[in-house]
Image (cartoon, rainbow, N blue to C red; front, side):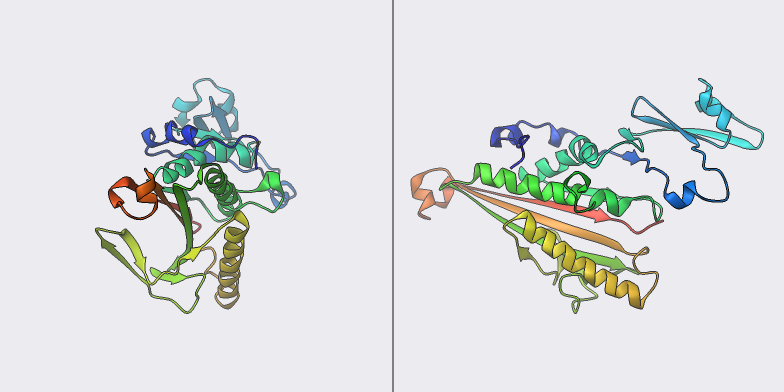
Length: 280
């Protein structure tokens, strides 16, 4: 268990529910092929105060304090403001702890939350969401699952029970398919009062550890890879959504724990949608 694991009260007192919508941008470092290309690699951006990024066709403009206002001749300079801008030196832990973690915590409080990675093909969306096997290189999804099961390990008791389920779907050409049951395709989105918005026919798998979640992700990735072999563009032009549903049942007194009085029970369901959008 990580040393920075939170106790149950820390989750309840977090301010994650107060920040409903955030947009952040992450700049990836240049790839070897970009550094070793025929043309010398040059950055055309500047990051200010972790929230603003200036992009300019005029490299000298980036050193001008008036850069955000410069736009003349054949060169353009633009400044954008986000909730946070991660530089090329940022690491996976920074991105998770400062941006993604609040959404994970809110799902453990019974809310629905989504983390969406969007960007051009090759900009590092899948790396940010999934990462690599090395502990420091793990992405948002493995860190989120570890957070969830750490919380459960700390909070579970005779009066508090948990159930975690996971699903994995792909959207390609507006067709929804189940990556964990490939024969299930052309699935439909439905809505009802009890379940809210859901995908009819999408399989749900009970998971008991981060390792089991990782196994489902690897299984789904193999399905996507197979499709990618048969259809060259499907990987870069499809959306992938990994869904984690966390249920909590708490018995408030001994009678309710024996199933005799449902009025003494509280029930929470939170859904976390982890989305790797198609490359633009």
